[in-house]
Amino acid sequence: MYQKETHTRTLIKAISWRVIASLTTTILVYLFFGRLDLAATVGILETLIKIFLYYIHDRAWSKIPFGIKKVEPFVVWMTGLPLSGKTTIARYLKKLLEKEGIKVYHIDSSYIRNLIPEIGYERKDRIIHLKRVAHLAKILQDNNISTIASFVSPYTETREFVKNLCKNVLIVYVKADIKTCQKRDYKGVYKKALEGKIKNFTGISDVYEEPTDADIIIDTTKNSPEEAALKIYKKIKELFVK
Amino acid sequence: MYQKETHTRTLIKAISWRVIASLTTTILVYLFFGRLDLAATVGILETLIKIFLYYIHDRAWSKIPFGIKKVEPFVVWMTGLPLSGKTTIARYLKKLLEKEGIKVYHIDSSYIRNLIPEIGYERKDRIIHLKRVAHLAKILQDNNISTIASFVSPYTETREFVKNLCKNVLIVYVKADIKTCQKRDYKGVYKKALEGKIKNFTGISDVYEEPTDADIIIDTTKNSPEEAALKIYKKIKELFVK
Image (cartoon, one colour):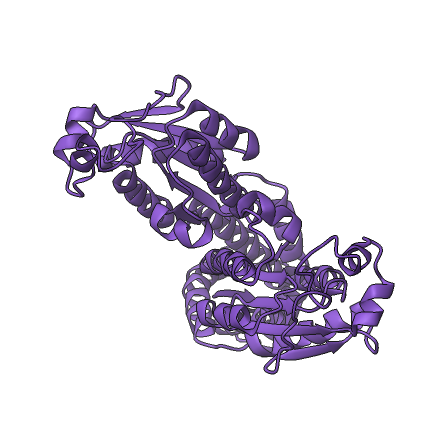
């Protein structure tokens, strides 16, 4: 739900303020000088002059760029090994951005399954899948919604695709060595992958093509998720909020 | 791109107006009474009183619901035979809504192919496909974007699914008898379907389950696309813009 104000509301509000403001002036002048007729004349003149002045004032300000921030809808694309911390950082980042009034949608791999079918973990399937996610980001961007996408996205090809399809793309490489990720294995996925129960598992039985052109590299052994989110947040503000 | 104003801008703009307004009062009072000292005092007092009054005035208005319109993001789901005129009406409707400042996205079957794979025209495939489209509408709705979806959507099941998944759904049945649609066959699809070159073609070789619970029925033999769009537009304003 969002709100809009009608022109009628704005107009009536402006009139009610003008009445209060000019009455105040009239009363003040009357209290100082004791002449009700002159006080009333000052009040009426004030109304007429200030309606005109307010208009000029507002038009002048509309030409002053100071303090107007343009938000270019962006796409933060987070790549990294499974359990490197992408989603956690994405959630912190979303909070920071929303606090700043920036609309952002977190493309979540669990919800996305309803929209886009899981088609397997072979290289070609993964590429198709991530291209579809990129198209979703594009649709949202066309509607002024920024996105944070957190997907393993192991191949250079898909990351390049995102960059070409969408505008204002920030590739964030969430770097964690595989031993650290394995220690965090609360889902038990690394275990299953090592046992061969999950095939084409990035880092174990499938390649992770390290990004060479990432816009931001997060070293999760050095930065906490909060620090990482703040780092990305600052970059977003620098590049896309002007 | 969208714009935001910083607090600093709003503050400086308020101060610049207050200075202009109070100077105007001071000058007026001076011109009437010829006492600069008293005129300045009135100006200063006016500033102080009006800052306070403006605050009260604004707070009071924030409690008055008059003229505030709440837009509930909606989903207009247009169903009907191929070439019944869904897309044409959808485009007119989009224009009407945008003129009113209502953000709306037209889910277009040609673009959607990049996001969602074409999986065939068997009943089960079509159902899966349209459920995915419904999920896209849901994502957009969660981001305050209304949608117009124009798909043949021949089965009751999928239309029910949309209604359950999304809020504020308006099922629009674009009704045209099959002979009329065939006459409009500029794409040559009906011809191919009749020749058996396209299989599972709605209206020829696949069923169209006429909606019994449509919120709006457009009779395209009686209403022009513009009239149809206006009819839907009025219903949207009535139901979702309050």
